[in-house]
Structures are given as structure tokens and as C-alpha cells.
Image (spheres, each protein chain N blue to C red):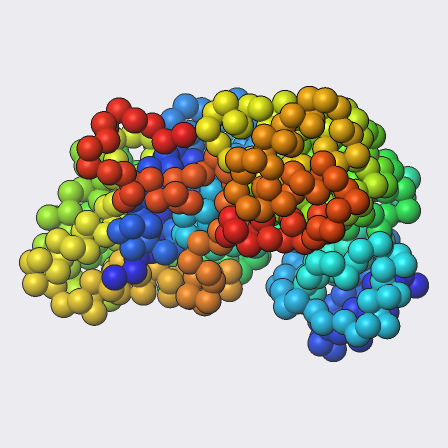
Length: 304
Length: 267
């Protein structure tokens, strides 16, 4: 099967992860702009991060045959540094219109402060102006209120729920999010979000319509194979293949494809891996290191 | 607007794509705003498309006058539209405006920017930018500067040129596709490549057959020893290359032909 991981922070991941994701069937991914685990203090750090998302990381991903897309936005945590947030808001239009930017996001609430609310609303307006989908990060703490409040604000600004993805949903928030017409995304991330057995149960309860599975893998203890592993578990536990395909591929494509920046032909018509574009440092792919190693060779040998 | 690219795009773009382009150029001409320029530059793929354009022989020879070697690479509609926008900038401000754009550009924008620099009347002002660009590890961006582009041969100093050529070899790029690679060979570069060949041999790594073209014409005793070793122990193509450098008068394939064969072998 082929998969899309519609939420994964690849700047924090290694080439081993890219290799494993491709081997597991991931053909495309979306990297939402987020925070880096520690707050930035200069607007230049945002600029270079945004440039990395549309430049270096896109290239890095392509070497492994995975199409890389991203979303652009000021995350809610860093919205609390207002002078910085103002400067980032000036930078955003420049990046939001770039090729392969499929949404404004991830935006929403963290502590639900006044500053968070202000920059959330300004970015909703930017998405409406540019006619881009929106990716909502729902908070870890006070999740239910934060999720409902996010939807209230979106509706106040006249957003069409079919162009909004509400992420990090759980058993407590899913029904309301679905009822109000939004794309409902679940993050398979151990500890802070959810394991994939719960996801199988959710699928049995809700079915595949408007449901999306992602990994949100980042710099924490997380798993970049969450999407393919969850698909495998769903199949093992009797979910029909067509439904699995919707929640691990088709729905993400339909939701983010509304940007006009993401089409299935981007990867189906592209060469698997463009070998003429490989940098010599990436001999992993060129030599097929792992498959060609002889059985007598020590595990301690590193390829030359 | 009377730029050769303008006439070409008029013939090759769909009517609404060309109308969009004309509209943006006109608004930049009437009331130049940097923001309008940035947004128009960014939006090119959406409004003019990404198809590769096919030119007639006579169009290509006209373009090769404005931009030597133009016909050696493919040009897409959005790339040429972006280059046309670059040429529409006031020349006294274009370094500053484009520096900001380089600083925020995506992968595809970077390629168009670097391919387009030669078209600018003050292209020489972009040498520092080009040297910065050559520090990239994004292969497509490196290729946009180093391969078939007339800018480096015309504007880079010998040291900058040598750094670019060495990096191209290090990245396994097809050396024969560097424009004017033959004319800009030099003794310093030959020495550096001899060191590089030694380093590769000590590391038990192959030496590209294309390396020996940089030694051809600079036959020190050290070069001769390295070439003789390669002529004895190399792969068939390495042996051909080493013998050619040792005896340029003997019948042998051209360096470009050796380069093409080497590229075929590694891909």
C-alpha cells in the first residue's frame, strides 16, 4: 500500500527515518511549520526555518523518493512573544504563496492566551485571503475547550469546515469535530497523544469518512512509521482495505489537495528516485548498503 | 517591453498565461513595488504553468546570442517568466531586491534565479551571490549554476572557478557539461586534481575518468606517474582517459565523449 503522512516534522528526523518511511510505502508527506522544542528569539530564525521547509528539506526528502509538502504558520506557543509574532506575520505572506505550501498551519491554541487568540485570527484571515486550507493544532491541556473554541473562532470568521483539518483529536473531541463538518485528524504518538490500538477502535466506531491518521513525529519520542504501522494494525483487526486507504492516503490528499498545490500525479508521474540528483554523501541509496552486505561481514563495518 | 524573452514567451505561452504576465509587467512598469514583484515571481508556476517549452532552431540561435549556450538545457514556462521578471527590475536596485528573494526562495525559485542571472545587464554584480549559491548541497541548485550556465566561465575568478569545478567533481556531476570547461583549465587546478586523485586512491575509492582531462596539458613528472599508473591499472575508460592525457596527439575519443561515457557508467 501507499501512504501519505500528512503531519510529520522531518527537520528533526534522520536519513534512516526517510529510508524506512519509503520502504514502508510512504510516497508523500506534509511538514507543518511548528516550534523547534525551544522558543526562537529572532525573526531570522523563522525565516531560515521556513526556507528550509521549501528548500533543503524538500530536496532531502526527494532523494528518498518521497514528495515533500509543507504548511506555513506561526505556532501558538511562539505567538506569545508579541514583538516576534508581529515580525513573523510580516514574513508569512512571502512563504504562504510558495509552491508546495498546502495550508496555513499548524495554528490554534496552546495556553489559550489573548496573544494566541490574536495571531490565530490574523492567520485565519490570511488563509481566507490566499484561499488556502487551514491546519489546526488542538492543545494538549484543556483540550476539549481549546478544540471547541478553535472551531467557534473559525466559524466566526466564516471558514468553510471542509477546508479545515482539526488535528490531534481524541475520543472526547472527535464526535463534535465530525458533526461540525471538519476533517478530523488523529495523531499516533506515544504518551502525549495516542497509541494505534485506540485508533482501530475509533475506526470501528466512526468509519473512514473525513478521518485522517498522522504521526506528528518530531524531536520527541515518536514514530515516523505511525501511519503505515497503524494501517497494518487496522488490516489485521479487520478494517476493510478501502477504508484503511482513505484514512492513511485518500482523505489527506482530498483535504490538502484543495490548495491546488498537491496532486497525486506529483508522485505517480515522477521517477521513483531521481538518481541524477543524488549527492555523493548519500551512498545509502546508490549502493543499497543494507541489502548487499554479506552475512559474514561484521555489523561494525561502516560503508566507505 | 523589448526583451528577447518577451517575444519568445508571447509565442509560446497560452493566451491567458501571457495576458497575466503582461498585466504584472505593466503594473511593475507603472508603479514599481517590491511586494508586487515578489508575489508575481512566486506565482509564476500557477499562472504560466511548468511545461518545458520547445523552441525552433531560429529562436534558439537568437536566444544563444543573448545567452550563450541557452539551447543546452531545458527551460520551462515558469522559469522563463521568472527570468523576464528579473530583467524588469531597475538595475540600480536589483542586487538588493534579488538578495532578499534569494534569501527566501524555494527550490524551484532558486534554480530559476541562478539560471537567469546571465540575462541581467549588471550580471557581474552577482558574483558574490553565485559563490554563495555554489555552497549549496541541493544538487538541482548547484547544477543550475555549474552546468551549461555561461555565468561562471565569464564572471568567476580563477579561484572561484576552481572551487566550483572541484565541488562538481566531488558531487559526481557530469564535468563535460560545465560551460567552457576546456578553456578555463589551469595549472593550479591540475595540481589540486592530482592531490584529489591521490586521496581517492588512498581511500580505495574510484577516480573519475573525467578527472584526467584537467591534467591534459599540464604534464609534470608527478602527473605523468599518476597517468601511467592509471593507464596500467584503471578500468577500460580510465585507461583511455589516462592515455589520452599522456599522448594528446594519439587518436582517442574527445574529452566530452569520455565524459558522456563516464556519466552513463555511473547512472
